[in-house]
Length: 155
Image 1 (cartoon, rainbow, N blue to C red):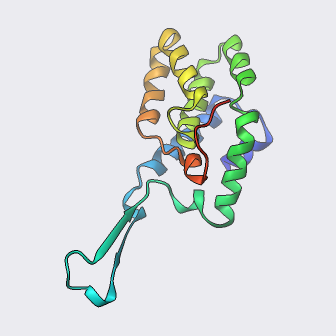
Image 2: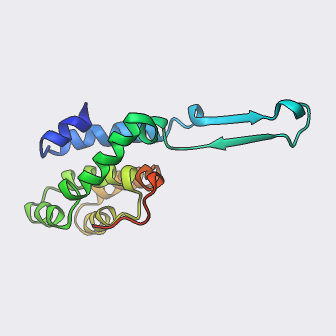
Image 3: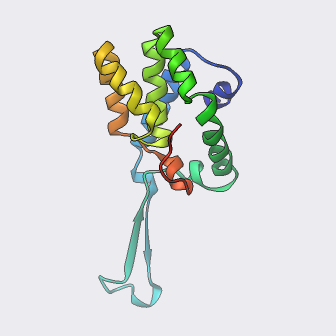
């Protein structure tokens, strides 16, 4: 529901804060995304199984929900994370908004995403508290949009 709200409005920092919090919780739920496959003919052999692990929840990459998130992420590159948007936010001085949007962007697009790195550099100079909060998200970022067939993303 938060994502749908963000599609309809240009929300303040509190909505982005909630969304960042949700993405952080999702990034920490790793145990549910591990799977193991055993070859039926060689179930007793130690070398006959394969294990896969993904930090990215299926809802972001599979089925209709995955397609929706792929489209949403592509659209948000221009709607919420463009150079023009960042320049406006910097001129307005809304550091909390930039911090939480960058936190969300790190989960969506990865910690190397230009919006994230630009906001991080700006916050390091202007607001150490918001910078610390952003670093928590960067350290735990999912960056799932890259797994949807995207290479390096910039704006």
